[in-house]
Amino acid sequence: MHRLTTARGSSRRAVLAAALGAGLLTLAACGGSSSAVTAASSAATPSAASSSAPAAFPVTVTGQNGPVTLDAQPSHIVSLSPTATEVLFAIGAGAQVTAVDDQSSYPTDAPKTKLSGFQPNAEAVAGYKPDLVIASNDANGLVAALTKLDVPVLVLPAAATLDEAYAQWATIGQVTGHGDDATKVVKDTQDRIAAAVASVPASVKGQKVYHELDNTFYSATSATFIGSIYTLFGLTNIADGAKDASGGYPQLSAEYVVKQAPDLIVLADTKCCQQSAASLAKRPGFDGIPAVKNGRVVEGDDDIASRWGPRVADFTTAVASELAGQ
Image (tube, rainbow, N blue to C red; front, side):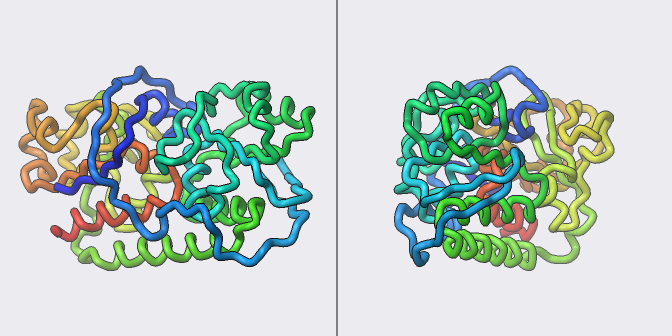
């Protein structure tokens, strides 16, 4: 059994909203938190200082909301996306961040506020006098409202693949003047993920995996960002064959999971719902599942598993360790 946790908790509603890309699915919050030592990597380690040479401005980047031009390097960034917050600090732009939303739990020294990324208030955001706002969606007419105030907004929605995530990190690097740093973070993450995949024996290909988003059996298919990680290992995702799997996040049932007999189970509800390998084994019928019998359960971190930042390398390494029997 492998643990991958951080020292900060968050509400389940927020975690699932992040995992489902701006609230494609709404579930009741379970509440609760856990505390443990962070499995930090060199790729995900926050840094306020940059090793890049000064970037040339103006620069133009493209987000979901179209082209965004900055005439000068931003020095008062507001992040309304927990993933963007992680990326900003990982690429050395932390010193330029003035405020982050209420769900940005990593790094712990990020300037967390009461700002909401899910239901943003443009007036409240503008109060921090930002020269760049990064968000994961355009809820509440955020872009139009801030554009009227001459505040540049870059919308970077939930990534569906690693390549999409890497592209977003590069965009954030370019728009903040940390392009070289972003390139290094991407390369380091790619190398760590490749090493993790290479460490697993070929015999695991075809084995079944069950990814649990909460204890009501919501899961994630191979079409999602987190599901794409399992594809790298050649695993068969039991959520892919479920009813309503086309949405990417089907709700399974205990009976379905037991019948599918997964070889690996990843719990992404250790913080929200206090789930663990021990509690899993106590569920009716679960003690006979191969993953439970063989102790192949990853106690994941809800936040890491729902974001598309550099710590995805930590997550991949944790899965690889379990698959390799380490």
